[in-house]
Length: 131
Image (cartoon, rainbow, N blue to C red; front, top):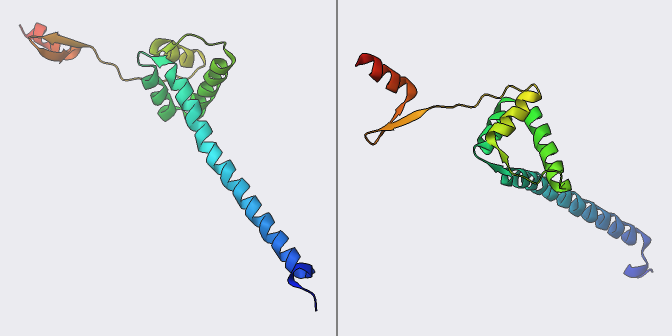
């Protein structure tokens, strides 16, 4: 009778199980790395934004997701390669999208502060016309 260490069938089963566990562990590591990479791209790109640029990018992501991802990816590559050293403001980012033919719409409003109250441009004009 063969001992357990010499049984070829038992050895084959052990090898198969080890291969399954190794493959499963590799798959889990790959899955865990994907979201972290996406977050890293967002973190890096958004850290280069100032003056409403993040608002422009969020609007672009909602209105034109594939184009926004392409721009974000391009900005990320430029940042990582050192070709983009300055921070990007909202107007520049909006101009970039428009130059690429992506008409991103960002909600804007003009407010006036009068007697401690904020008034929109429409309210201010209607008040001046009614006087």
